[in-house]
Picture 1: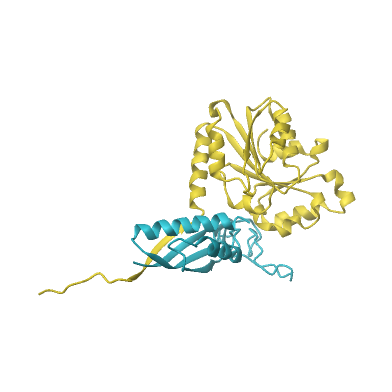
Picture 2 (picture 1 turned 90 degrees about the vertical axis):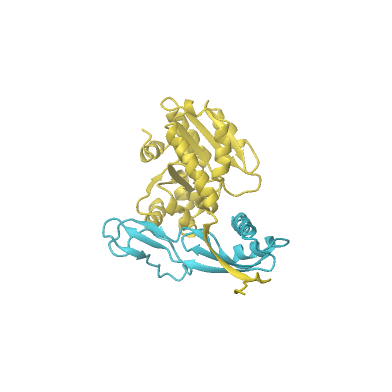
Length: 123
Length: 224
């Protein structure tokens, strides 16, 4: 639901960076979306393509990679991905902080963020 | 003659960046958090679905806590002052934050609201977020604690359909328990759904209309 403002942030950062490096245009932006973030990639891409008009990103491609959600268990020290629910209605990642090995609460150690990993630009 | 390196037109290169698109908000949230600590103010970000009873919960909490704490309430809403008018009747400071079209409060809006307040006079700030179970979860405000309110009238699947926000909360309130039977919705089932996502969360049933369960919410937030 907030993909428009996030796409706008993303474009601001990329435009600023391109200007700093004296680039005339941006060819691609490589974005990483954590699976624990609340962003939808399709909506983000849609907003991105609307907002890049008349910027140095106009003909750029948005490439998206996904970062797995990982938790750390305080009790048994498990570190790794969460267990996915088997029910057919959960067809996308269903988040849970329950440790898959011991059932105690875990803490998120990755997958919460969304960041620009790199950009390819032209001078 | 030595080798000449000339600048080529149309040179393509890669820039490594690793810059978070949420960073701007996270930075301001940290500043807010620091400000709260400096002034020794406890803060709670109250998120929840539309019509779940966020304002009713705040009114009930304010009634019980206003003798003990000097309270301010920030009410986030798209357009109206209906909620802040309700809370103001209890004699505490209120600041209305109208987001216009945005579906969530962000750290910057909260920071702006704080600019108008006398923080030295306060020891508790309740922040009512915009009614929404998706976006507010992503935008930390700098509040020490986060609470999510849902109600039984929204049906039995509210938690399962919006799991992410429950990972963010340390207290979850399930409101309107007086209507649970009529709605054929079980508190225990909703509670189990929350625990399946976030076993550390404290889940409390309330009926804000009848002032039921409020003391347990206050206890879970360690405001007693």
